[in-house]
Amino acid sequence: MAIVSFRRSSAGLRGDVVSVEPSPNQHHPLAVEDTPNAVTVEVTATHHPNPIKRTEAHVNEQLIATLFKDLDPFSGLAHDAQPDWTYPHTNFRTDFFEYIWTKYVKPNHGELKFYVEVGSFKAGSITRLAELLKTKYANWNMTSIVCVDPFSGDVNMWAWNNEKVAGHDFLATGLDGRPRIFDTFMANVLDKGHQDMIVPIVASGIVGMKLLIRLKAEKRIQESPSMIYLDSAHEVDETFMELSTAWNLVEECGAILGDDWGWAAVAADVSRFVQEKNLTQLPLYEMDNMEFSQPISGLILGPNGQWFFMKNPNGNCANDKGGKW
Ligand SMILES: C[S@@+](CC[C@H](N)C(=O)[O-])C[C@H]1O[C@@H](n2cnc3c(N)ncnc32)[C@H](O)[C@@H]1O
Image (cartoon, rainbow, N blue to C red; front, side):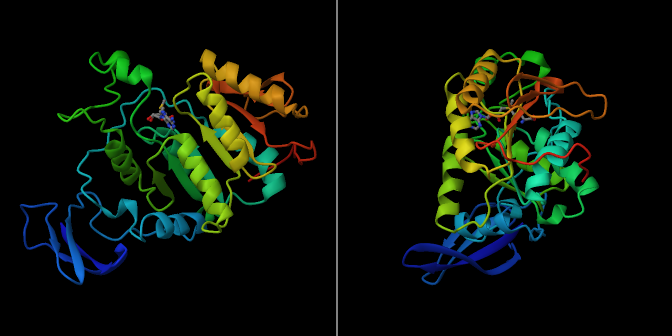
């Protein structure tokens, strides 16, 4: 436990930390002491009592400064959840990511500076990606990863909340009825040690992606993402709106990828969107015994219900059959 003091201004908390010191009071984890010049907040930092060591990735650093008053979301405000890796439906495939990155996106962007995931749940897919990058990508410390999710579940998760369908307590609602997904997400990221690469934005996909578009336009962040992974509510029409927003956010010759092709709403909205964009046919390459198909020009289906298309409105983005990390 520690006491963090912030400087106060007429506009409210400024966020520059004046001091961090051990707490003399172990029994009041969120006591707030307000003085004319400073506000003191006592924080519980069960998993990470120390300041977070961040990589040099620019967008993460800029988001923490511009959205969170320079206080890293992982620095320990009352996260008392334990890690929980029992969610059985993470379909994200690192080999499919590798295929898209090396053969279609890297030939255009060179480096992966910014990746956005919409629908992160308990960090199953994003920690797989972070692990892959740290293992295979020499410049992983320049990659900002942003996870956009209201962390409040989807329709099925609520409808099944008293039943533990598929043996998993999706929402883990507390006595106040609030889903505990975000607490588990934070605990799981800390558990795998990927808090150096990841920034969460607790908002719907549309709010979060529109926010990133606006922050880029206002020069408060310096990059747009090269890749956006969509694995959110999967509601018909909402998925189409997410795709339209993701298209506006992603850098040209970047990729929009996603999960759950087997969900009717996903297949219908992704197909409608790609057809409307009239995308150029992509070449299919061989890799790791994976099977690919292209049911609509520009839309590639891979293993485990994974799919992707490129933001390639003019048909002139590069591909590389022999592309490597
Ligand atoms: C199936 S889970 C994601 C699983 C995760 N990607 C994995 O593979 O481990 C779906 C997530 O979408 C989130 N979600 C629901 N509605 C959303 C919305 N409108 N925008 C973004 N995320 C949403 C839920 O809170 C939930 O965390």
